[in-house]
Length: 208
Image 1 (tube, rainbow, N blue to C red):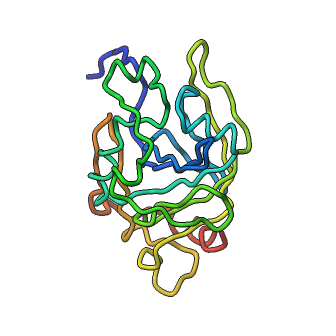
Image 2 (cartoon, rainbow, N blue to C red):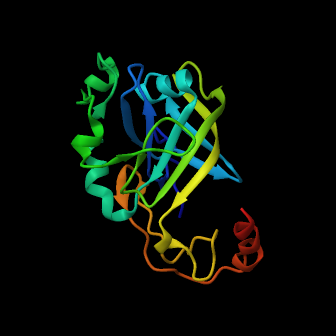
């Protein structure tokens, strides 16, 4: 039996993304988020304009989408109630956020230079996507939410995640992303069932 409910937020979970951007003074900001989805060479990010990350994206037009594996959950969680915005926005202060200018250090993560964009990558993340901002759409009024479209311009992947004999194809059985599911952290279980779509779309992934 189904029941009608009225949740405050329709949020069912996606892979966690650590977004690295540059602050006005050139220092790096690092923020976890999980409202993201990809299509071809683009990604749509759902975030609040009040965040330091979005302010950095609007000003600089660049970022890196670092995808942590499940074993980095501790580092991600250490960033959960930190903000690069000073002073801390009232709505965040009320729920316990505090200002932190050195998020890489606090999380125990290592910045490394990117190839195309200025913000650094997270060395520990097995997938790193350098990106440029394409468009920003107001998502919902009167809230501050925005849908930010970014174009992926360079992809870095740990070699051990690649399928044997392939240069451009990630083996899904080797990739274990960190998932945010109803505001709780999860990893992937084993593969449940072979997909009939895999043989159809695999050649497309190899050509990317």
